[in-house]
Each structure stands twice: as structure tokens, then as C-alpha cells.
Amino acid sequence: MTTSPLEQLTEQTAELLASIEALATIEALREAEASLTGKRSILSTLQKSLGALEPDARKAAGAELQEARRVVESALEARRVLLLRDARRASLEADRLDLGDVIVSDVHWPLSIGHPGLVALTQRELEDVFVGMGFSVADGPEVESDWFNFEALNIPPGHPARGLWDTFYVELGEPETVVLRTHTSPTQIHLMEHAVSTNTLPIHSVMPGRCYRRDTPDARHLVGFHQIEGLVVDRGISFGDLAGVIETFTRAYFGPDIASRLRPGYFPFTEPSAEFEVTCTICHGDGCRTCSDTGWIELGGCGVLDPAVLEAVGIDGDEWSGFAFGFGVDRCAQMRHQLGDMRALIENDTRFLGQFS
Ligand code: PHE
Image (cartoon, rainbow, N blue to C red):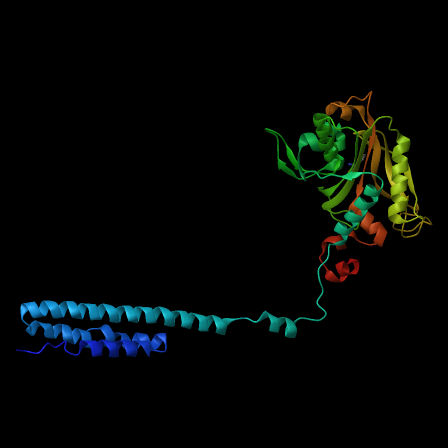
């Protein structure tokens, strides 16, 4: 009787498992793979020798050998997974960028922390002054329909005043013209419409925000700039209330030696209208180049709400009256900090911006 070639299979399997366990790297595993389970492996040699056995013995031995191969192959797979994971960990470790080291050695100390820009700071200060006077702060969209930016403000299509507020058109004509707002005045309309529909008059609000005009930037004009709008709608409001608010604001924001004055002006949405000027902060009223020797600098416009505007939003002009004003936030920053050129505000030069932290 021939002895089974599988007599020592248990030990041989144990040896294979031990050598798999001893593989230390994924490269070593790849090299050893053929000799462990491939065509020239002990398992394949044993497989071939089964042909010499009687059919019954061959069947039993075949099953045994198949089981041994399964055990060895799964041990090899498990080892492969483990070694791949180790290799990946090692490469991640090697590739790691230690930012702690970079910061310590490459960055200038002391580290500087960012802060809001001068325009944002100015806007906050202006809001604070008005909140201190009893106003609330509201927000409006920067993209407006023609109706909000012009028509509701008593500036119908073709009105010559549209030339003062030339802008960027997002959409022309049908179904409606859409523009980048040229002033914060359309937010007046939003607030009044809201107050009418919710029955929440009176209104005492300021509305800061970004505006756009098709201007050529220069020392005193930017294409994208900021305004702060004021709106009061209440009973028995007069031009005197408006002048008082402007004067109080001017002293609170610019200081006691800067005064305000109103000069007759024209805006389609206020009547009477005025230009609002403050003492030149450069020469303190003596006259200089910045104020063209007048001693005054124009900050914005204002006036009593035109009845046509109240009518457009459905407010009864016999019961309610009000005033509005609007002026440049960037211009305020320029006057307060005596900036020769407003374009410095948008040039992102940290040597400039860093002075206002
Ligand atoms: N919206 C006007 C402008 O941008 C300013 C203004 C606001 C005038 C409110 C009167 C009332 O020039």
C-alpha cells in the first residue's frame, strides 16, 4: 500500500503559516507569494502527486489539501491587509507636514490677527451713533428692480434725474429692469411697504449697505461704495426734526468742533430737499484744497418725504409725514481719518488697513 503524500500535511501547513507570519513588509510578501501558494509551491506539488492515489484515497486527500490551501491563502490575505495598512501608515507619517514647525521657524513674530476693514468699522460706528439716538438698523438687497431703485422714488423712466444715478444693468426690460442699486434709498421703499402690510408704522430706521454707480473711480468716488440711509415716518414730523437729527449725528460722530449745515438741493423723492454738509475736517472750516476753500464738505442728501413717494407705497400723507437722509460711509471714513484718496479703502494694502485695527 502506498503511503499518502499528505502524511506531513499538518506540519507543512504549520510551517507555511509560520513563514507567512514572519513576512515583515508588503514587498517581502509579494516576493514570497509564488513560493507559498503558486505553481511551484509545496501545495501545488502535493496536488500533482494525488494522481497516483486510489480514487477513494484521492478524494479524501484532495479535500484535506483543499482545506489546507484555504487556511494558507486566507492567512496570506490577512497578512497582506495588515502589511498594506502598516505601509500606508508609514508613508503618511513620512509625508506629514508639521505646520507647528513651519509657523515657529518661517512666520514673523508676533503673529498679527486680522480685523474688520475701515469701511466695516465706520459702518458699525455710524450704526452705533444712530442706535443711540433711537433708530433701529435694517438691511436691503443690493440688486433691485427698476421700480425700487427709481420709480417708487418718483424717478419715472426717462426722468433726467436718472442720469445722476447711472448704474449697472443686470436685466434690461421684460419682464422688468433689474439693476445694482445706486443708493440705499430703495430700502426706504421696502421698509415702508413692510410697515404698511404689517400695520407697524411709525418707522425710525437706518439702512447701511453697498451701492454701485457707473462712475470713474477717483480720490472721492468709487464704483462700489457704501451709504447709510435714514428714514423716519411718524405723525407731525417736520424739516426741523430732520435738521436736528443731522446736527446731533454730526457732533456725535465727528466731534464737537464739526458742525453741519443744509443747503437747498434737489432729489425727486424728497420735497423740500437739501444737501447735507459738515465742517471740513482737514482745515476745520478755514478753507483748503479738499473743500475747495469753502470750509464745508458735502456728505449726502436729505429732505422731507415727497407725497408721491408716500402715495406709491400706500401711506396716508394726511396722517403721516417723515424725512429721509442718505450719505456715504466711505466718505465719512475719508473725512474722519483725513484720507487723501478714497481708493486706499479697496486696495488691500495691509500697511494702510493695519492702522485701523
Ligand atoms: N439717495 C440720495 C443719493 O444717493 C441721497 C438721499 C437720500 C437724498 C435720502 C434724499 C433723501 O444721492
